[in-house]
Length: 251
Image 1 (spheres, one colour):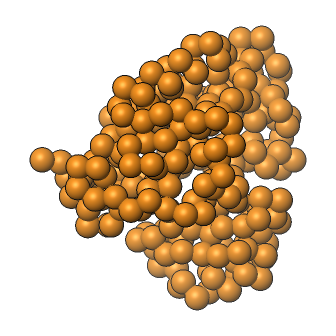
Image 2 (cartoon, rainbow, N blue to C red):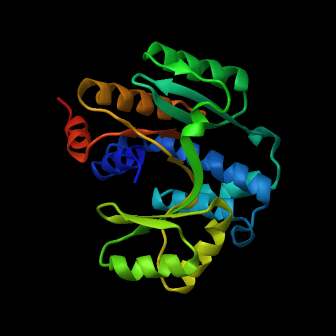
């Protein structure tokens, strides 16, 4: 599992995301709306929408909120015309950062991202520079409580998955991007209950960090994630579990 994924899992387990639930809901609603606009309002025929709804449910979003977002997107509400844009840059220490946004005003979003990265000691990159440090992959998360790794692993391989990792309470399964929905269906048919399903960026190479350098990069990533228009942030750092837990505990 990538360093960034491990950090996100640690924060979630410690409840760090609870204080930002309102902002999290806003980001999820935006994704549900855009998914419905792009692929229609029927989850069974729209993998992106199905994944967005699964994420919303995992965050305990009220069903009424999800339904309203789907209806807005499927109805092409003029107030929900978001544009998908991405930005690339580098954190201190040469850590590559790839940022995916949904925005109604890229003239606001771009300067916000640039200002934050440069203010915190990083730099913006040209299109394709930081992205070259990652591979696009499908990602399926399976809550692993009371599940046997070997059984789930066998089901994942049978369905066409590329790899699976055990991450303290959940299994992370990776697939080729165009095989994600096929693997999802195969695992569901095998009786495996799935959590989050979607596309991700997996580092090809990583940058090892420790001490103050690790803390600075994690803080920058969190600040980028907090920007209203940012949906996903991917970074190719590698920080030991012990170091991550130390940082998460704070001073």
